[in-house]
Amino acid sequence: MSRPLVIAVDGPAAAGKGTLAKALASRLSLPYLDTGLLYRAVARRMIDAGFDPAGDASAQAEALEQEDLRRADLRVPEIDRGASLVASQPAVREALLERQRVFAAQTGAVVDGRDIGTVVFPDADVKFFITASPRARALRRHRQLHGDAAIAEAELDAAIAEIIARDSRDSSRDTAPLVQAADALLIETDELSAEQVLEKAHEEIRRRITRI
Image (cartoon, rainbow, N blue to C red; front, side, top):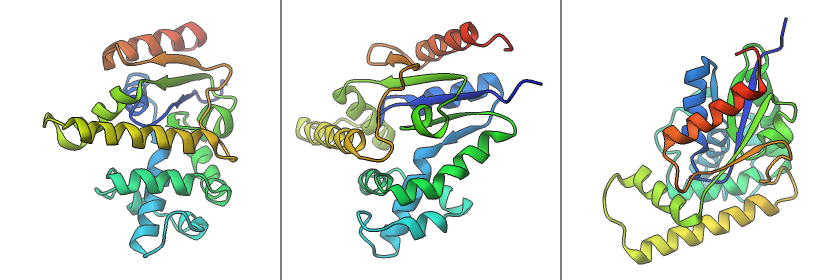
């Protein structure tokens, strides 16, 4: 009996990895796990408790419950920064590591994050690294939060600067940095629609996996 299929989707914020991962999970009839949501929920717990997310967040990570992941206020700017800060803490990552692995152990999964193909599931069947320019990602994040509302150039510049700063924090941290796995397929999404990215990824999965 073959082991459950695990697809790893990594990449920086707002590059389109979540959109791809959810679409792949639907097409492959697999569960989907957004690991970034775990760190966002930990940051939310820290802030709600009156703590700086840069402080020791291991206790909040260990106390994380399913209800924390269902909150509607996890994708706001203060949590963008807070999630990056708590994710840089080795104790937090260790507290959440087994939760991520157990999720996919029985049925397989499509899992997205920043260290899925390098740390969480280094033996994943197929790995993708999704990226885009900081400008494209800033515009996407604005659309996620504000729909089709126009964005001022100064606001866009600030959003780009924050994305670049987060990339630097995520890629330079000592524990589980954001990095492309050596065996991951790089997909740059600036000029691709979500459907084109999905088709490109699905074709790669079909090429590598004979059982689907």
